[in-house]
Length: 185
Image (cartoon, rainbow, N blue to C red; front, side, top):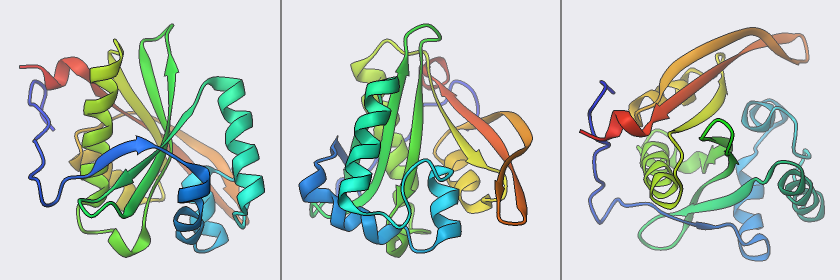
């Protein structure tokens, strides 16, 4: 997205709403989205348990929240169905918010749901905080996710080669960012 271009608004029928993740209500949907070990590693760099189980996932989220202040969120479609998940970690020193563990229901991928979720998340986070930017990390070997983030307005800021090993593969990590100033025109 070019600088000084506002994030497009979403129409009502395709809108995605963001709310706090409610473990007892939401985990079963989320559990089904991590379909295999490689997909799981692409999603969370193996920082969350695989295969996902309710107790392990809840415990991991509690530990991450206690350590770095992450807040988990769920994205829902107009019918209220879960379509995505992410955590947001504020960093008051840098005035940035890190999106982590971004995932979309596999049945909804390729339909613009991820872009709508990210746009809604960015709008919400900028409205609720004084953050100057929202950033995220994505493995370079996940081109669909990188394209989704670019279409949602994020730009690539840096690339760390050979940042993660999965089996006999080595993945590079890409940092992407969207700035508040880029949205205000």
